Amino acid sequence: MASRIELENKPFLQLILILSLCLISVILFSILGTVLSIVLYDFYPNSYYNLAALEENQIAGIKILQLFGAVGLFMIPPLIYGIIASKKPFKVLSLNTFSKAFNYILIIMLMVAFAPFLSWVIELNSNMSLPSFMGDIEKWMVDLQTKADLTSQYFLTFNSFWSLFYILIIVAVVPALGEELLFRGVLQKIFINWTKNAHLGIWITAIFFSALHLQFFGFFPRLLLGLLFGYIFWWSKSLWLPIVGHFINNGSVVIASYFYPDSIKEADISIFKDSEYSLVFYSFSFVISAVLFYLIRGKNKKELITKQKENSTAV
Image (cartoon, rainbow, N blue to C red; front, side, top):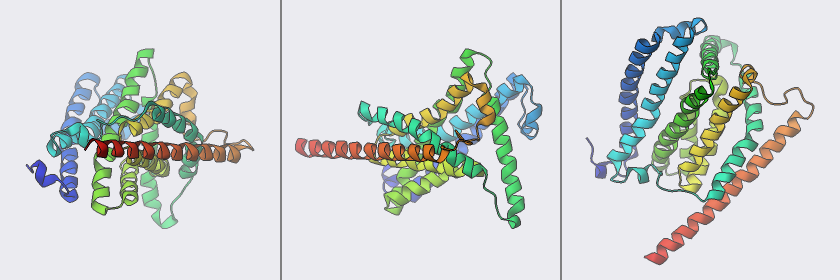
């Protein structure tokens, strides 16, 4: 195994390492999740081909399989990578740096303000179509999206109040922690170091972040979120801000679906779609989001400069 010294400033080797860890980990955890879903809930992987006919206990099997797959792909590999790459894994993953409390308030406000504009982008993306000569590819994408939408409906169906917390863990907590650890905590740093360009590294990471979900009709909204989280992480140097933002984005959907179950059926339709003021509303959402976005940028740059001055004075 490569030593910590051999990994330092070698982005290609770092990329090979994290991708290898992801492959090994997701295979092992998927096998474990599959065994548990079969034993506990009689859910077999080939049941994915007939999602509409699943029974209630088999739906629980999907959740187990999804949970183990997400943990194996997103959470475990970055943690192992951090241990291999540094004697201080939390530092190399930027988990040891906390931002000021006001920044967390700003990120919550940003995610709330950004939601209407994002829903409009979701609507635009869902109505996109490929050229006729790419019909087979589009059919494949539509099939994937249909299965993803049906799976989402299963995930956002609640049996009790306590199931809300279980689904929050699967849909919001694990993705927020795991995906930010992998994409921002590891991959974004690798691509920035490799390209020697922060903007290029952030964009490459955001594209990978969106593409990995294999949902063409949700590609651009996820790309925007990837860019949003990427820049906030780059400015703040703390992974906790994008983690909070990611959790708010996913968790709000879960909570809304719990209190307003019918909203699941309208998940791909933007707010106030038929209103004559819709464009004004979405424009207002974008402007407010942009203001909050650059406010976060300004505050974190000032904090970073202050810390650098304090460190230089201490030396």
